[in-house]
Length: 364
Ligand SMILES: O=C(O)CCC(=O)C(=O)O
Ligand SMILES: [Fe+2]
Image (cartoon, rainbow, N blue to C red; front, top):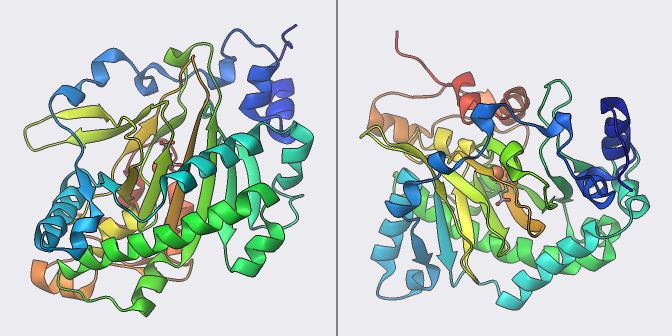
């Protein structure tokens, strides 16, 4: 028998008691609760996902960086970062087995009973480094996403071993280590191309805060009414993203020829996705673009994704790098602390790339 919810009960059951959207679906609901119904313009429909026939996201073979194709691979990375802000990578150093284990670990975590997961709810979690929850913005009506998440902040191996759940810590640590190496290499290439030679200190400053999320999107009785994740860009420097074979991610593609469409990003077995975050758009004075993206829900299989976010630290001053400004003649963005940017961002959830207006310098 499906439970009957009014809005308050639902909030209590899903958010406070930690049942999440998964608990809601497992309770047997056959309709999407009112709170999750999106305004029409945020819903997914056939007509706004049709760019797939026209363009395809590049798939870049990173092993080429070590061979005679080095220059072409660098060029491909730069071009992808300048245009889509999103691309697939293969030969990224992560064994396929590890990627499978990571997705299994995510399923295993969310398949636990609510009592097991809710020990990690904000406020009761044994450490701020681990956090379970479901997705909604408290001050914004109708902002419930069809998604539960589990976040692991990396500070040190010792902390990870101490606080992260037994069944995911080894695999998540390995994912972080390999991804960090890859992300640094990509970052180095991108910065070199704008005349900056980053050393390890600089890389650590710009990508020193590391967070692995496990996202869980349960099956939805009516995917046409909901969003898995509303449209947004990531705020950090670079995100490494593992999605499973269910699909549902799309990115917004805009070009000078007035095209403005959503492009589906189907999973490619063994490949990972890389996307540029707002911080790198700011640092590069707008040369590299953060990508607006979103996730739809499905009625057939639950989906997991595992993004790894590399962000600047809270006290890092975000501003276009001086070498780039000198070359461009003018800064496009004013400086601000990353923590201020982040706070402002959360005030603009679900508004695509609007957060960037906070630092954009508008011409007089
Ligand atoms: O699930 C996905 O494919 C995307 C996840 C995402 O965009 C995010 O967590 O920021
Ligand atoms: Fe994202």
